[in-house]
Image 1 (spheres, rainbow, N blue to C red):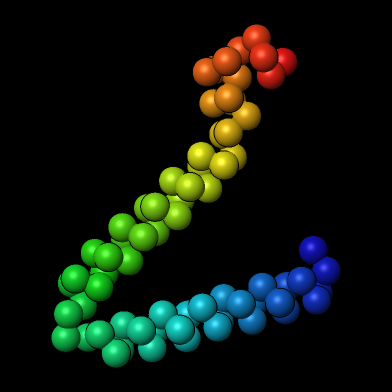
Image 2 (cartoon, rainbow, N blue to C red):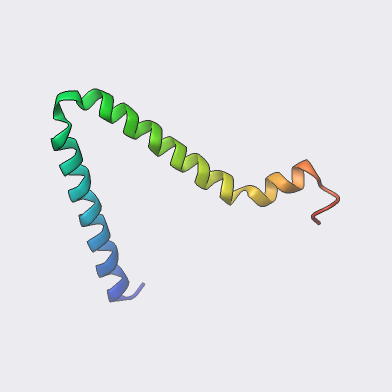
Length: 68
């Protein structure tokens, strides 16, 4: 990675952290519910990424003769 990419990654992490802190500060009265919902959305996001990453293997398992 180049210096520009590290700077860009740092900027995005910093921006994401600021947005998350603002969101949790705005919803501090119902922090347990917000945390639970954020965890559910995070798991959905990870599941979709895993499904996209494994799509080739899933497709070959369902119909092994057609896609080889």
